Image 1 (cartoon, rainbow, N blue to C red):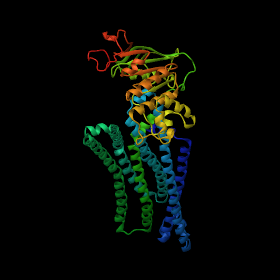
Image 2: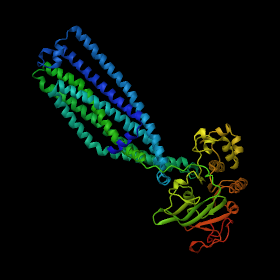
Image 3: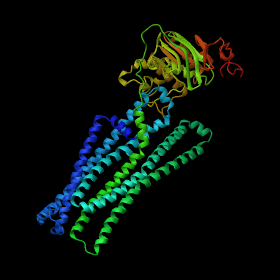
Image 4: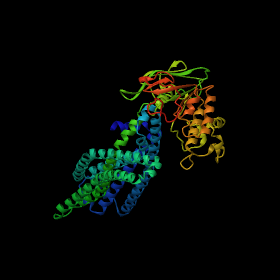
Length: 592
């Protein structure tokens, strides 16, 4: 666990580390003021009682013995001023602590998202999206509230407690040593007993938070089904069960956090009252009165510090699970940088797969022995049944997945890493995303504003037959897209196509690009694809007959193998036509 905390420390920016150092210095200054104020209070208390009764050589007695009434008033004012100054400094430090904590939270959030998106696509896609979202939202809030702020409190209170302990041992060694030993033993026992329980509760809480976010994401991502099937009550019941588990975890943690305060307060007050009770019959000497008074002031401040220290340790331990997750994300290896985006400049070339295989589960290949070539100037269609591996094939061609076997060549050269394809191959998937940004940013996605060419954006929109719609929107390219400014399914498909066309790559991969379009718009886009094929290698994966009919060549993906239409397919399947007829016989090899 310590290694994970050190990993987070190494991820901080230099100015964050300087801020932490400044807080250390500030807390040392506050501790000095606290001890100075306590010393002044002890002198005043000694002067009010009978300083002559104190043991000779006691340094507070020496000072109090030389203090007259006028000086006594001055010391009282000075003591009050010191405490006012100390509390003013603590207020400034509290503001700086909050500023540092939330600054670090933002910094780590940005680094964590960059680390996740910088990972290999296959690693990221295998992860749980809801858990990643929870990590970047609730997890980072926990880093701030359950790690950074408690850690800074631990620093401040620990520094102050050390100063108070040193003062008490210096002024009243025997009396203070007994009290402090008792408090120390009880504190140590409480921390050791709760240590493992708190970590287990923290892991349980973050697991339930992941589950809750996954449930809510599913609910609001599928509202149509929720209403059609009247599944609201079922969803509410699921949420109630998760909240009950979360509530039980939080209650258990709150009780663990409150227990030290009860135990320590009873111990301190009981010890002081026991001393008074035992010595009351013989009479309380001035020495004992001063000891009880000074320890009462310092001890109750020490008690507050111990409570905060124990609570901070428990809260930080509670955050241990999220610290581990954040540290692992930040330490994850990054994928190699992409080669760039756009065309290579060469007039000829091809994207070739030789004997390529791929499996999500070992021993169950999705693709096997795939041989495929996409020339620079061709329109190729790929069809196959649902689940045959067509999208996986496109992701390999796009450089998103590494084949388990075989060779990938780009323009005649074998690629050393799949990242060589990223930026050289444009891709529009089945479920294109619309980001909460302007239309300009959605088309030129991934580019900074100053690098976007508006003329190229309009050209891509026109080729995707979406320019007329955009010209009619308020703000046109500056029109903001989002939940309340949505597009239809067909418009989203065309926006994704415009995004791919804006990249202007040598190869264009399209997964069901006309699935949500009417016949007229589909024919317009197919004409665009034929035009693009004059300079670009275009692959269309589709179940619809129209894209298949306009292709220069058609391939069938069946049993993990890719074969040209009209040749013998694996396992004796004969593909004899373009299968343009919708609703083929169930025994037909044509895709359904």
